[in-house]
Length: 311
Image (cartoon, rainbow, N blue to C red; front, side, top):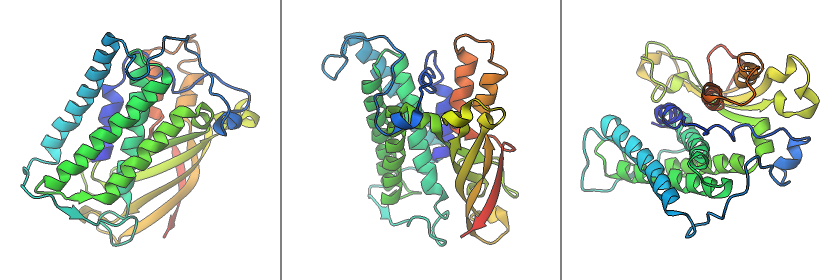
């Protein structure tokens, strides 16, 4: 479920200014910021926008942004998840975590975490773009993401096709929490990305949301975020990638089930574009913001060399 919504969110919330905070101003020691130093701020001071002091026009913009997200998820859910309708009974199911005999070997759980993570990051930028300060924007993004995704899980409990999964709900919280952590720590954001790498598997159709055998969930450590490597070409474009994925959990795969850990090297495509295509831009334009937002969360096939280790 989560992967398709992730792709939709990256497109829907690409609004002017939304990507401005994805890559904050460079600092001398990103690790110091990641460990708790004050985060730099490139935006001018604005009047306090704590809850209760938010101007009426900003409240309207916030409500419109939240409402748009709710409508997007609701429309997608009615078309893809709940098209069989609902029952009057709330049903639950223990789906397990990452075991070999679970529904998708844990790939579906990482899908929930990845979408919650990306939604929190994207919404934080969107709330800043409509006029919120960084702190309130993070809070609004976190609670909006958790609220919508919790509502989706409850709706699953009443649907005819699915059941409420406590494991899914927990992974939603984990993903949203990681997104919030990244938003609070620009130095950590410069060092680490979380991405989805998808390549169609077997005889399946192109389906990033349901083709678990084609999904790889990666955590990358970026050389461009390390002071000792940032100034060296071409090292600044390389990353250490660690990931997880499963195979054989669809009928179309035609192979034995396996759970796999991946280790290798990936390319920082956003950094490459920043130093090539957009090198003459004094300020990030809409195209650059859209590209950086996309490659912050998506790893293109062919841009990572990964070694597979079967569990």
